[in-house]
Image 1 (cartoon, rainbow, N blue to C red):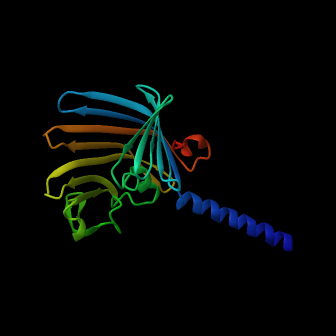
Image 2 (image 1 turned 90 degrees about the vertical axis):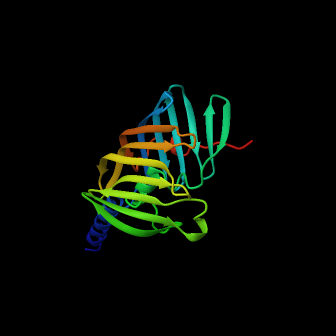
Length: 230
């Protein structure tokens, strides 16, 4: 009788853990990606490869395969570009990883663009046909550094983001679409990002993702990829 109770307990615990892991806890995501970039001055480029993110490590790793093989490693403060024996270190914008589509999706914060409980406060919510649009203001102490952000939600999913500078000038626009769903995990497989530069130039990036996987145990080398400082 005792053995039966133990077996039933283990079975119940296993099913509970499996259900919890599938529905509520996602810690890794990887995907094939392509980025098409074009500038208003006529320049164009195409980059393709695979991307990996483990939210416990908080580093994004790009295994770039085209136009040439190289590795990109994003940490909290810097980006490393590794090509053969060469390594280049570049500073990045604070919050790059926290506001990445990978981190927001894994932490179920994509719908509000991660702005809840941040340096932003919700000012107003309006409706425009089938979209719900929220306006977020930076806290007073940050108002001279960054501007407002508008977030549009459509079909209960993040659809668009407008980013303004401190003088209320539009500096960026994003559109998220073509969501894929794995269990309760949702991920946009097409993101259009338009950046408005100070010189009047516009840069458009169209990023597409395919073969999206979550919580996979293979390819640990890429999830754990590291660069040793000299």
